[in-house]
Amino acid sequence: MSLIACYALVVQLAATALVAWLGPQWLWRATLVVESGFLAALLIYVSRFDLQSLGLHRVDWAEGIQIVLWFQAIAFASDAVILWLTPAPLVDEYLQLFQPATSFEWLALAGVAAGAAPVIEELLFRGFLLAALRRRFGILTAILGTTVLFALIHLKPVQILAALPLGLMLAAYVARGGSLYVTAAAHILGNGFSFLGLAYAGIPWISADWHPNAAEGMGSLVLAAFLLWRFLQRYPVIQKSN
Picture: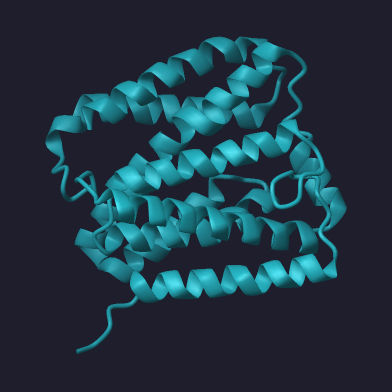
């Protein structure tokens, strides 16, 4: 836990310093305020929580790598479906939020998107919130509740749609005994690819401005549904009866 907290703190401080070069983009600033506040609370109250209940335990390397790759495959496929079905004006509105003009701004975006944000969001949603809801209401409510809340904090329709299947997958994995270290790694990798998609235009299944045709969109839909179905068979949302 202390290693994750220190990592998030270093990246957060670097991103906060660099964000001074950003323009007046309220979404960025709101995200930084929320993450900074959560990080401060984390560092104050970290000793009061059971690390095992938060999912911070060792994991087999082979299983961890498999989950990270599984997560990224679903992310690629579901993002393609969203780009295929979402009206172009909504995609353009989303892309306008992330238009760095200088190298400092690009570095700030990288620090927030692929550094502090994934670690802090995993600790908050799949760590503290999932554990609290599971103790009080059970696994089903914990998984669905954290999935919806995780999606809603992304604010923009394109991001909300993208976050729903991934949030469901990560919550189900941790709720069924998975490790938060694995979800943090998967989240960092996924956001890293999203950052590359902003930096480089037109790359299929990566770039946010890519426009899939009907065959690509339908194929991605089938693949995403199959992969998510198989994943939820292994880490079910509803406990199977004996």
